Amino acid sequence: MSQKRTHEIACPFCGREQTVDLWDSLDVDRDPELREALLAGRINRVECAGCRKSFRIDLPLVYHDRERDVFIHYEPLAGGRTLEQAEQGFREAVRELQKAWPPDVVPPEIHLVIEWSELVERVFLLEEGLDARLVEHVKYLMYRQNPAKLPAETKNLLFDAQDSTDAQLCFVVQDRATRKLEALLNFARADYEALVNVFDSGEQLALLEEQLPGPYVNGRLRCLRDQAEK
Ligand SMILES: [Zn+2]
Image (spheres, rainbow, N blue to C red):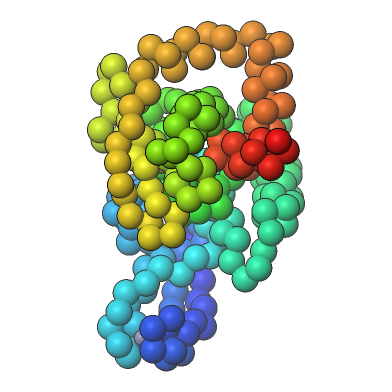
């Protein structure tokens, strides 16, 4: 069920305090218009009653789309929350959900994201039928191959469904500080399919899960961890 809750917030621009209703759960099967609203950046976006400036409030958000098999939990690291705490909260939420799941139905795979851009990206990626862990592995390879042009410290790589073709998976380079989109990079879909085949066997899949264990799976962070270990 889609759900909104009332929050007291202060405008980040003028400081005015106000009461707003914000989504904490989007059930896209029942409310398909919420998918469009999310992809258009309208979810949990507030216009200040005082200065009229618009901003997004980063609160945890659950996105469920049974029809397309897309289940994502957005757990922003707001207010000094660490990744470990977000992962812990996520694990508890998943356990609760699995308890409530009908015993004769296999529970869905639920994804954890911590940045808004990742939430939107993950919706597109799963709707395209791509494997999120494998796509993060592809990003890891791209960071490793282009350390000068694509420093993992400062640049995000985001899957771009709109510019992808049958031949190429397209990725946008985003600067982490300015959030600006700077360049497009391609990865041959045939190479992705080859990786799907490589990681099809249990042994290889175990290696991939060791590289990107989760529940939060991120090729950029994996790359940074490798660099720190060197
Ligand atoms: Zn304001």
